[in-house]
Length: 346
Ligand code: SF4
Image (cartoon, rainbow, N blue to C red; front, top):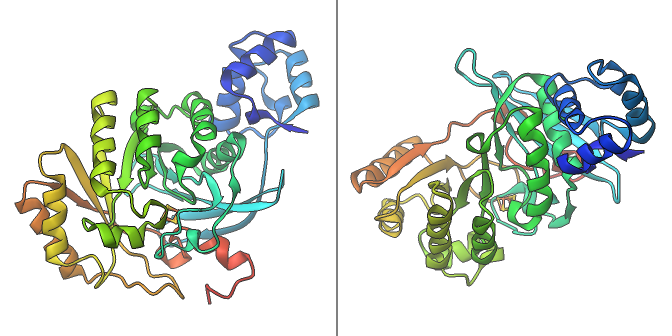
């Protein structure tokens, strides 16, 4: 049976019209499935009975299975989902409750099974790319996440490099925009910043915020930390980020994984500030999540603080991401590896 959300919103509207319904019924289906978490078309009583029957005869609402779930004491919930077609893959999504009362959660989603970028500090890149996810497999992560509670923000920072699967991601975001009311400012897509792809994406004015993972101000070190972009000058990546700002009017966030003893010196902070001087941007520092068998360390808290102070003194806006769900192996890719038979997770 075909996955319902393999249809774009436009295609679903046409399908509804062709089957005795109206175009707007597609929006109702999205809201009922994604916001209300209904599992069966029969329960969507605001749709005409005949349309419900036609949908049920042709489509399935779900397109994957939950094969593992880990819940951390702070409520952060990591789901491992399996998708079967065209090949079986597993991917993760993470539901991160807000620490502020009354606010919805943030959902972190994946766009690829495995990742071809190969960052040496990341569990997801250890085994390379298996395949791109289809748009409905991306939507399925939202559907499962929304069943855990209201979602008010999404970050596309799970497994994979979103710019290498942008078409499927764009279609999925169109679906969830209406389904769970996630507008452009509530979705952040994180990329290592392939300059050509970034410029092409900016021209189409996609409806999301952009974060570029920089990880080092030094060319040789970035080449090692982001192997797929080895040899691409950092200035080209930053120029593509500038172009994004010009085209979309939305500021770029630069992400920087702080690796203890590797890229967390005060000299790194000074050179990072120099690289970004004159740019309207935020730097998001991410203290590294230790991962068994990956030879990088968490930076010392005083080093993180000193790093922030250097950036702030240089006029940069810097934030530090608070780790969530570490207790349940919430670092990107860990759960998937732990279930794939490897002994990496101990
Ligand atoms: S950090 Fe991101 S881009 Fe790098 S290997 Fe992991 S998933 Fe891929």
